[in-house]
Each structure stands twice: as structure tokens, then as C-alpha cells.
Length: 366
Ligand SMILES: [Ca+2]
Ligand SMILES: [Ca+2]
Image (cartoon, rainbow, N blue to C red; front, side):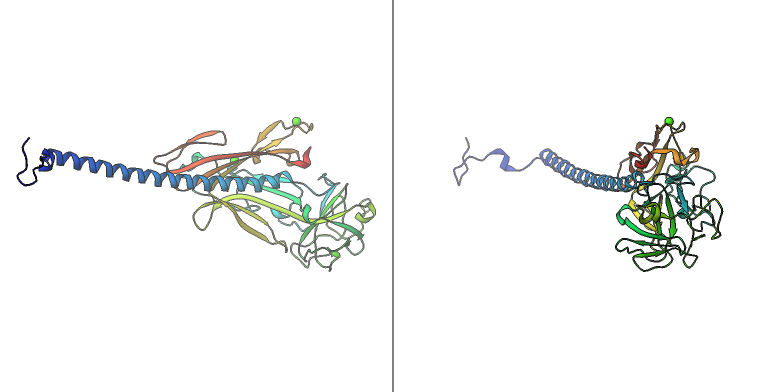
């Protein structure tokens, strides 16, 4: 072996420098590794965004379904009485134009988004998210639920039919203007409180809006204070076991929020019987609702139909909700296939979509 003249050590061939070929190979290898690392970073960033959006969608879907199913389950709850015919349920409110939020006679009802007669003057909201799929998807539906608020239930001590007044046992905190219900095991009446300090509740006249069209609770209701032979004032106190509670009504629907996101909205009555609208859950693009209707009186559902196909809202026993959830941002590499309310679709954008579904039985309907 040749010795170095100074160190006396042998000189490996590699320390003498790189050939052009070696340099090119090592540079290519380096570039390849860098590209791989960048690719990995991009993939993990994409996976992170996708998982973040998926979690966001699932949380919102879970929340929306829990809110709606809880109300649907309790639709038509007015305490002990579950009858809602003219002989068991009366509403003394001035319903005038038939606004949806004053109609407590239906425990549940709604509108089909694709019904040519919707939106209408009763329920005018229809500013729905514009989907990239255009007319392929059905328009979003609306569901309306009314019920008594069991949490606010207090026992009624007396009913003075002469001065349109109840007294409760203990106290209540219902302000003037609030829509209330009184129920025993046979009958229910809806009215608006117009006066009275606790424990009293007075419901005379039109000092509040919408006001009461009569001070006399009758079955069936008559909008008059006159004595009507054969249809006397009903005295809840003498019938016994009457309870007073707040009357609630809610409408759920989808529209685009000011931020541009598709959102589940809820409209309900505040303490002075004015409508208020609240954002409940984001990322919901569409709701489809199928109502399970009993058509032969055996309390067993015979068919599932859209709101515009329901023949008797009093015979709806089950409600199926289909929510179409959309990711917060465009997180997919290409257009996605998705299934919604029994049909298949292909998106034309890069949002991820997923269907969430629930089936709820109405408790007061056997
Ligand atoms: Ca529909
Ligand atoms: Ca049936």
C-alpha cells in the first residue's frame, strides 16, 4: 500500500473528492428526501383539517339531533290530558291571521320545502343555503312542535270564571304577556296572561298582544264573553287537580347565517309572546322530515310521508329526521359521493358531507 509521505497513513480513495456522478446522485437523493418530508407535512396538515372538520360536524349533528328529538318526544305534552280535540283542548288567543306560533292545536306539524305552496304568509322563512348541486337536492323542510313546559308546572288552587283569574299554590314567575296553559286530566286551555301578581294569573282582554278573544274558557272555544246556552264556562278548579305551566312552541328550519354558514335556526316565543330567532347548530345544510302516520286508528304507523302528504297531524306517532351536515371548509381533494334521505348525490365542490339520522316516537301518542 502506498504511504502518505508525512503521516505515513494510507489515503482512502473516497477522501480524494466526489465525482460528478456521485454529486448528482447525492443531490437527487437529498431533493427526494426533502420532497418526501414536504409531502408528509402537507398530508398531515390535510389530515388534521379533515379530522377537525369531521369532529366539528359530528358535534353539531349530535347537538342538533338531541335538541330536536327531545322536543319531538314531548310534542303535545300538556300534563295529564293528552286529548287535543275541540272538546278537550281550547285556545282563547286571538289567532287572527293564523300565525303558526299561536296555533297550539297541533302537537306537531310542518312544511315540506318542495311544496309549491311553501314558503307562505304563515311561515315565510325560506332563505336556504344555496347548494352547489342546485335543484338536485330537495329543499329543506320545517318542523313545528308545541307542548307544555313541565319544568314550570305549578298546581292551581282556584279558578274564578267570573273574573278570568286563577290562583296557584305557592308562587309563579310568569310575567304579563306570557302564553300559558292550564290542564287537568280531561281538558287543556291555552291563554295569555294579561295581569295579576303571583299567585294570581289574570287573562282578560287585549292589553297584551295577541290577547285573548274571550275571558270564558269553553269547550269548544267561542270568541265571545256572552253566555252561550249549552256551552258554559268551564271551571278548572271544581274539576280538580289542575296544573298551570308555560306553553311552548318551536319551529326548526335551515337558513344561511350572516357569516355565510348553513345553520339550524329555531324560532320560539319569548316571555311577552314575541317571536325570537336563535342559531342552534352550524354546518347543517338541509333537513328532510318524514312523518309516521297512523291512517286506520290502531296507533300503529302505516306510512312515512312528507309534511305536504300528511292527512291528519293528530295521527303522527313517529318522526324521522335526516340532517345533511357539511364540513366547515373545503377539505376533500375531489368531489365526493354522499347519500341523503334515501338518494345518492355527487357534490360539485370539495366540502365533505355526511348524513345523520334519527327516529323519534312521540310520547303522548301511544
Ligand atoms: Ca322534503
Ligand atoms: Ca295503523
